Every structure is written in C-alpha cells, then in structure tokens.
Length: 63
Image (cartoon, rainbow, N blue to C red; front, top):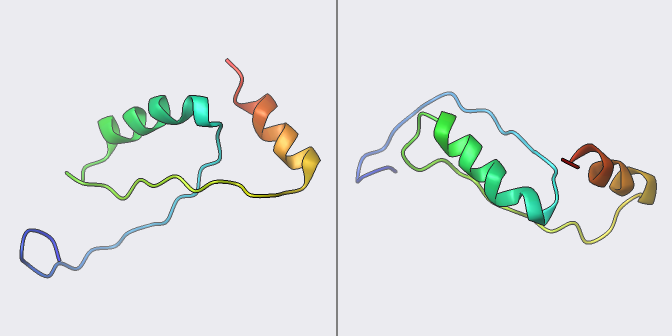
C-alpha cells in the first residue's frame, strides 16, 4: 500500500556494502536519483564475515 492505495510495480532489490562513515552520502546519492518519494533504504550491520572480504570493502570505499 502507498498513500492508501494498493499499487503494483516492477522493483529490483539492490544490496550495497559500504562503511558507516559513508552511509549518509550514499543515502543522499540514492535519494537524489530514485523516482520513488519514499524508497526503501535500510542499513543492516555486518555482524561477521570473511576478513579478506571485509578488508576489501574498507579499501574499496576509501576516498
């Protein structure tokens, strides 16, 4: 439901991985480009993971 009405639309799930310090900028970037008034943007913590992969996330998201 959206604004009291039932809607049907094609949607795609996108999973992005980043650091907490980059989240606000990423959210702003998505909102500026998304056509939905209220896009589903959520952050999920990474509780554990393969250390080399987690290190890669940090390296890949450095400024």
